[in-house]
Image (tube, rainbow, N blue to C red; front, side):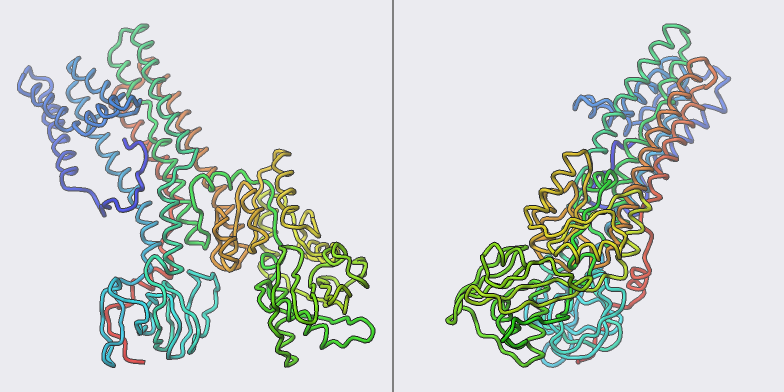
Length: 639
């Protein structure tokens, strides 16, 4: 009986049953048959054969029990050892042999199931090809991937997975990059386009200049995250180990009471045998492993088992707006200059300050400046305050671009009140030079189509949803109403988002925060579970406990559903194991279960609960099946 599935990186994986295990099981079963057919005859040699068969066949059980004693751990191997030795002591050789056979067979089946769980993770990670075609002297040469170097020209044929992160140098093709960005539709790649390792080239041949290799690629970072998650242990797994030990104490105590009251050795042995805990001890980590693998296959990387456990307890989901529930690619919808100022002047002034900013609103201003043929000059200095705005220094004076609140805090003359009834989902940006407002810019964003479905899924799971945004109240309320979000907190600075999350936690709520920007990072850390959109900033992804591949918020809703399903399976295993053990011990104590039937119930119930956990293991995805059908060792033609 395995205590828990080990998941250490680099361990040797076995694809099937070892020959030694089969020989041990078969030999023990043959000895049991020999003893059974001659059991009615006084033949001492069969007794010796039965004793040796039990000791040799049960060696793995005895060895594990001894190791557990040395580590002062109470496990099912120890209780089984006691039962086997007791059966031998009263001459129940056939019983001891059959119990040994049952237990060994159960361990093999359990090992195969747990191994399938490990392989599900390994299969998920096995998206990078082992070899790559690089250009050498004008021809394509196939070399091991480990021998590829940066700046190598890598040739990728149709149907192959791209082995490196890099830039397309030649060719024209469509690439399925759902494994990295989560985008369902293939993206066209031409000269100058970025491509990612682990994605699939679909049509034409591409020549890619390698920039990042192996663990440094985007997919390599995903691999590291999943491997760390596989090695981590959720608190519920430690609880499972502890309860498994308690069940052993319970079985031994019941056996002692049974023997004291009945003096029936067979009933006492049956009590020890029938109580099993592997449904908890092995089924729990298998369920956690399966849930992490299934979530990763669905497009969400959970960085550890403890985050999965926290996720199934979440009752409030706090959502950032820009880039999370909206597309994060806003456009300038209106320019409102002050009297005597042109639209062009407002945009040019704002573009000077926003030139180096990566904020989505800044990018919208720069795009409008480009459309007007404006080439903004470089400011001599600038400072960015997340959630507020930018102050830039130029030879013509100080430029301020930011929210109405930020402008008022800096005593900008002619600043709008901020109470204007702006268009439903537009953000008003104040532009000022030399302490005087020159105008405002209205920037609108579009709600993500999948966000509506995601919010509906979260509400169906019984979760409360909140929108936390730095935008003005009118914009936040418009988006919240459109998506039917339960509550909206608008005009929040990053530290105020943290305060809201902290207040919810103090009220006994378990909060998941979903965001994508630098200003979301503090709230992601403060929340019980931080969730970053895959297209978000590096800071957000590093701060988060769960990273979504791409921008599809429905992947988060699906991950919550997977976590809750894992919780339900683990809880069923706990309750089921306790029920079977209690009923089995009671029946064995009154003599209604003989040792063989007790062993069968023990093994059958444990395998049932382990297989119940195995239902979470991800199946082979169509992408994986397609990958395995592609002949990756062919040499790509020169681009």
